[in-house]
Image (cartoon, rainbow over all chains, first blue to last red):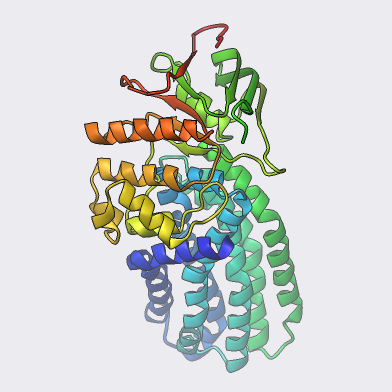
Length: 219
Length: 209
């Protein structure tokens, strides 16, 4: 069931490639504008680079949340899916996984390139990829709850950011600090462990919250 | 499936929209092989009743009980106002990747269903190129596919042509004869071979069947 639903989501994303590229372009552009706007000086960029990449990744993930439930809500597919699949949690998990595969994973893959551009050291790049790999699924998971709550509203964009952003902040702090620590040659396993805990916590709680949120929206 | 078995039991149901009661103390049973038409004015709560029976809308009082078959809860197929057809997927993919009554169906039965709703030539056409009536037919193909005991149809004749309406009426009767239960709302006159039982939604106060 999960695999079939996942195939459906990915096929849909493949048919609308524009939405697929959007967050990635946003991510690359934001990060690449910083050296132009601030300074191309390697030392400064190396210090602020990890923070910039993390903020850009977070905003890019948030930008793409809209595509998660909105279309399905408007043409009635969402209610039919919840009704007919027999397990609402599977539907929500398929949505979250496909969201991560289409927005989170490309960000992780492209991030080393941007890290080189921001003159982050090679230890820092490993840490950046690791933290993004653990952190972006959390962004998709938490985002799905916010999106589920706001999908029924006509202009839910602002509300969505207000709901979701405070929950994103711990991930941002731990992610960026792990990369800075790694760049300075320090141990960053503590931060990674915290992020892993966030990931496991949200995997176990988010499906419940998302389904409840969507049920409120479609009534 | 024995012909007198109850598919759905509704006791003392009441639905409230914010402060206004749409109806209260609604009691009825839906038996296998029976067609029940819900009638009432606009705003009487027909759609709300159907959504509530399917579990999409919480009800304020009373209870709804779907009879279980071999410990599996009965999943009615609900055809509402919205088409639930993805414009970017083809007609075939729309049915192939959409679970119905808790499972997916094989390619051959999907192709047969599409053939039956006369969309055979549109098998690989993206659904955004279809007209409103054709999109509606994709929804009807779901009815043919789904392995379920109950159809819940909310204004199914909307945007269908005369021939399509007659076809659907025929299939509703076939399904009821095979032991299925149908709950339907329609403002258009229907020519069903099986006389539908009427369920009047009155406002305000007590509704009886």
